[in-house]
Image (cartoon, rainbow, N blue to C red; front, side):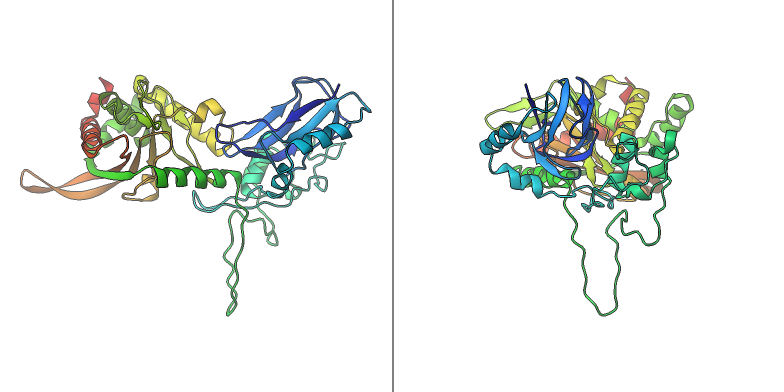
Length: 421
């Protein structure tokens, strides 16, 4: 008997997936546990496996095309079984879904400037690739395919250095496009004297979700902002000593995360979420960290950050950031945040305001550490100053509560020994 596999919901915010790659074709024999396809969600590229044994009788959508959650993905059954009536019946139940499956067409992306521009891809034609397997499919690792889509690299132009010419991660990392290639890592500014021009870029699944969620946050949650300067001189000195003995390099962001986690224990009103009729005060501290990737932002979560040492946090943030950039995060690694930190200090940004990351009530925007002259005991002296801005949902947090949290955070960072006690 034929078994229908529809598009699963692979993330909490997913409404549609894009087929990054098929690993089967009509007529293939599959067993339970076999990899069927790689699906690009709004947050990661994930594998879809078979739960059935049998023959692939129908594939509902081609590579590079979008398909809504719940729509027909493929049918597995006995060889030669007629599934035309099943397909017709399935489509009849959701007649509006067909156009949605066509619209995203080639929604795969090229890389864009961090967190700014959504992107488009090269046409998803894999049967013309130079690195082909005997059945006509491209020979590339799943990670290499995902990286190529993110960077807008046409795999037909890549020479594989893996086994039997298989394209692997290092081939994508080292790939230099030919001069004639238009699959650039971002929309390219090509001005022509006296002539107007533009480039339309297809919006990616990730960018669609970012737009929807942050619009909902900005326009439904009444934001207010509290900014404070923090003297990071003691942290600067302490970090050098820490890294002399730490098994993994501790960053300033790791120290800020630990300090924020400790401060949240003392200010539970900040560690909260608006639920409409109720406010939920979380009794655990899971801190999301905004990670910039080519198409936007992902927010992996460090769980129980208040209970972890700085070296544990440092190791975890490095691992999560790497997975985020490779689009290999699993749902458990991006869900459950109770507070979020967004740090643009490494770009030379002095201060900024961030939009709250639902369902959190607050997000902390962290600027860079700058040398400034300050007055102490009537004397002008140099100091290493960092500005932080707390964005708060006024439905949950009042101004005094936000300010008190920052006072505690400031105290912890200006005397970092307190973080360790």
